[in-house]
Length: 150
Image (spheres, one colour):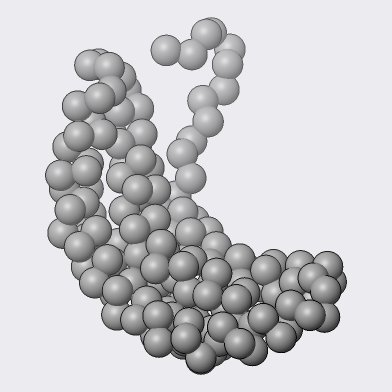
């Protein structure tokens, strides 16, 4: 319980969490591209050209993997929520909100992992179309988590 006179901070809304997590992988791709162009030596482009053809199929594989991960996370949300609630102190008035935030953070991270892997592949030369497909699938997987209700 907060001390008298302290203001209670509300948890971020579900839509805000979903939007921030969904934007994280496209932002990571942009940041990686900017850093690579500003700081990496020109010889790195040769390495990317050499590795690109072997990494692109792996990046393409990340797109369906991100969709499957999104569906799996959606199906596991009730279990994750129950475990989050069980960890909290009994009688905590904010227990439901804390469990919801923890559940969203865990379950929205799952479909982002293959998309982030594809982003690393882009840094090493994978085809941008494959990486964009994986990122789009990851974003769709994150937004799919919004379909579940506590």
